[in-house]
Amino acid sequence: MEYVYAAMLLHSAEKDITEESVKNVLDSAGVEVDESRVKALISALDGVDIEEAIESAEIAPTTAPATETAEEEEEEEEEEEETGEEEEEAAAEGLGALFE
Image (tube, rainbow, N blue to C red; front, side):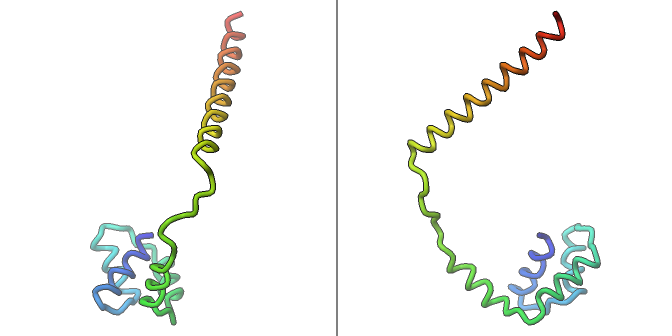
């Protein structure tokens, strides 16, 4: 993820996104640079309009549709608790068998 952040930082600073500039940003941040990942990033960004990509990402919905009601969520939590209790009981029985 650091590699993408480096590219975004360079873009926002209106600098060229090159292998050397990405390496410099990562070095400055104390990140151990993997040459192949830098090359892959530069290759993946070839021909990409970063500003357009950022704008299209901003259009994404900001709120997720509610798929479950509070009641359904509560039921799921109760089921998870019951499953956890059953697992604890089984583990305790297994430990008890060791001392018989």
